[in-house]
Length: 161
Figure 1 (cartoon, rainbow, N blue to C red):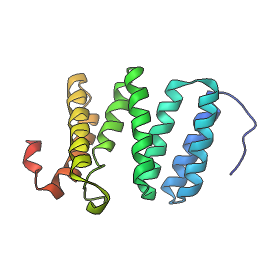
Figure 2 (figure 1 turned 30 degrees about the vertical axis):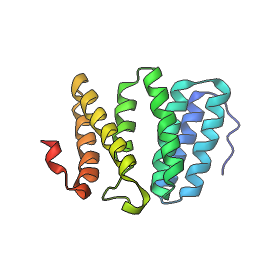
Figure 3 (figure 1 turned 180 degrees about the horizontal axis):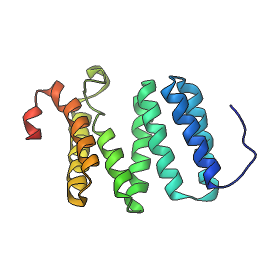
Figure 4 (figure 1 turned 90 degrees about the vertical axis):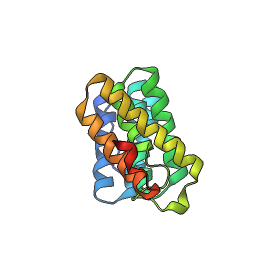
């Protein structure tokens, strides 16, 4: 990992961008390292927004890496911070992604329980409701996609009507 000696929020955000780039290149361990470095720096600065965004990105990376428990923890951290700081778009995005914690077309059903599936569907439905309430159509579309990926394997696509 490249060490950046500079300081400032934009540098910490750059660590997240690098982490996201590595995730897209399927270099997941490198990605996690960059996100964890950003997380440590945002924690030092007590930067709640930076922490929320970093936890969110780390959750996506953990999802791609198949680390279900780590992903769930990261998502819960992000959701809590997004709620505390009224970041509706961040909350919608994270809740929608949380909606795939149960069985979905992207996860093996064996990795989830019906209880976690019910909680996941509730998170996705909450994301959809908030996005609709604030008129964020992209957020609504995102929530619908993730809900469809989760409801389909359960045979419950009719819930989307």
